[in-house]
Image (cartoon, rainbow over all chains, first blue to last red; front, side, top):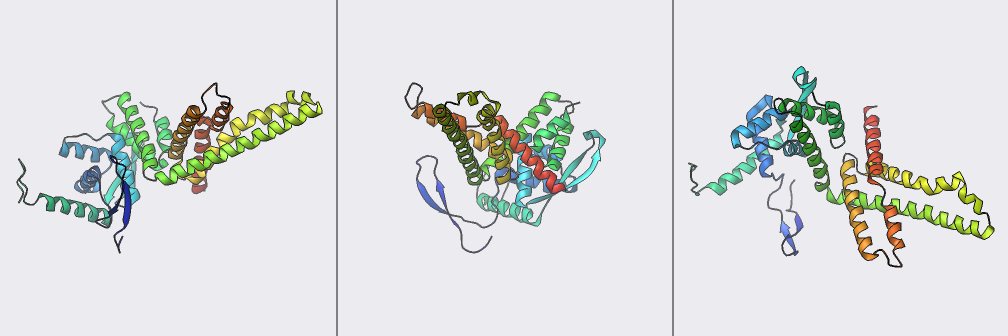
Length: 134
Length: 194
């Protein structure tokens, strides 16, 4: 998306006031779990499908993602054009079902890079216990 | 071994057939050593999550479709009801009350109870392609809200409480609406494959 920032209206949950919000950045904004899934797909490369993505997230974050959250997020990311999927060959271990492999698209890569840059800018100058970041 | 085909069918109601098959394959692979309960919990949570996301990602579109279908279904029910009342009055005036025992009259009264919900489901499927079940969910929620509002507005015992009955008559049985939507979704996929 480009051009003027869009003016959108939000309803606060507390006071029920309508107030204008100017969208700060063009492009896709990513939720935390969407970023986690995109990074897991990026780390796995060619071998990223539902099971390995879930296992990678568990290994890196210590949290096992709920199947509902994982597959909904994967579908949403594909619908947004941030990841693409292709079907692999059917395997007998899965009852003859094919695996659905995911890869990041150029838009997905740009979105995750933008989100991580924002995190880095926020972290600059912060001192967090156990995090050596300058 | 799980009843994988049932799981595929359930998931294919809320996502594409291809995605449903791959997801069931993943869940079957992950459930090795965890048992059937884990598998079915995963299937139900995935289906619920996809169903809900279909509603929250396009709320205006889905609720608009549901509201339109409630209005159309209610209108058809009222039309049938009005014609039935007119026929009843005519039968009383002309003294041909025997007609009220005929099969045609019974069909006229009963058929809308089955046909209107099915057609409502088909309409939901036509106007919310890809989000048929989410539209049904929105339809169910809106019907429930409408029913509660009508019940509060016209409590039993009120001389206008007949309005409540009319309102509930327009709230079609959700099972038939779901069947109609699933039918419409199935037809759409068959048309896409052809």
